[in-house]
Length: 598
Image (cartoon, rainbow, N blue to C red; front, side, top):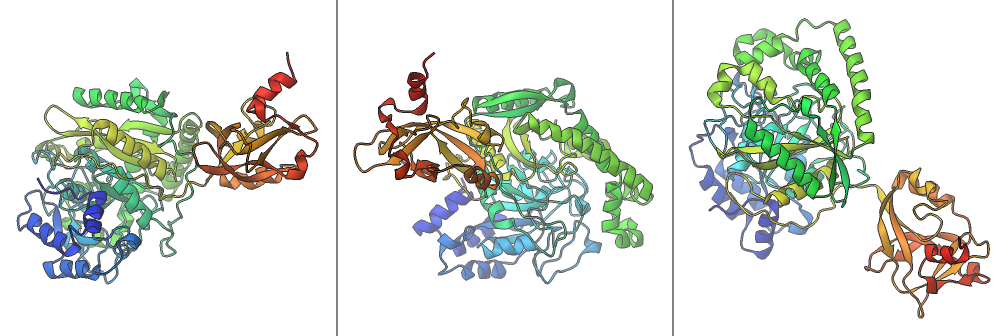
């Protein structure tokens, strides 16, 4: 069995001295060989260039290079300096002098690019068969489609040729191939990864996506690749994600109503989705039925509205000059964008705005949504015989995502009896990338952790905290406790209860003279543990909360019984001069029951 290329395993081997980047490159050159029976690659870096990348890492500190010696592949609509960018069309090809921004960031972090991968031409398709370089074949059964348009990128990871890869995702291209090849496929929040150096499909909707063996790997890559790029007009920084439903003991997840679930006759896929719902519930999730109809109505706009004109605009000069060199199904789709009027465009934009208002309301009731990634999978010959209709089926659960500005992570969810993978997708509002990947990790581990086309054991990587959460934890001990008079000052700031706790046994507790507030004082001796609650509040709300606290109280650092330290209520020493010591009661609620009996 080939050693696993997941990032945690490679870093451990590098740190132990068991492996060097140069030795890994030589091993990968052996794996790649000269045959490409799955039609994965369009072009590859030669052996000398790969070894040069590896030698540049010699003597560098692995601790400061998060992707030290990690091999990756690049979808061939993303620029890698020195290799042609074809977008799946040899007549369109050009050779860039600069890396795309996202590629440059990965290389600067120590990653080693192997080459450019096959795709549905001009990133138009979800199946992987629309390429003059050959239909890219499924990693588990080459008679079946790999999913597209980022087909080669997914199969390269699944077959153990690279640790991760880059795709693009406008309509589902970073998620469908993940589902069909037993991978994690993360479609980041729109704008989080720069698209400078990416051949556009729909420029206003495009997102660079990540394929990886584990959710932890995807998060590590995302943390390196994300960042504002002034050269990309659609770039925006990844904002703090807030409440981390992915690690919370309890969360609410949306499930499509039965009327909206579609598996296109695949009963096994339907059963596997039911098992995924049960798995989410076992992780602490509470299922909530969601009406998917407005999401599906939004999805119909992608190929039935002006965004087809945007695909035409992206390659207009080439398309008008050489339509015969565009792959037939792709040509048929893009040609439909020529005659869309400005009035039609505005009409569809108004429709989208109306649908988005309806869809956005769903997030008032749930933290995350769970859907199938694709309702079924097809054989290559089936897809080629009916390319438009079957491709549309593959986008049933994916086409609405970027139109509604959502983030999503595709995660493995088991196997059909024929050995083909099935996957589900976790969906959330923008900037929730961290919680999505944390929940995907728990889903993978609950499933059993099969990785790629080989049966590896899922490594239990360390918990990563790579993406900003923008949250402050606050311990409260008095009238801010749940159900007490000042608790609204927390809830109106969107604070969430993390749980009940105890302070370390180093505090004395006092009832202040006004009888309404307690005071907590840290002491060197004679202290006790005091009951408290820990709340999590957006950091943007923390300042106004602190500003409203009257003397002699304030916010300082409070040590909890488990050894952790959080912000919490403390009292100035002068404030307890005439106060009553109530330490023996162990907390404010217990004291209130005595001081204000029924």
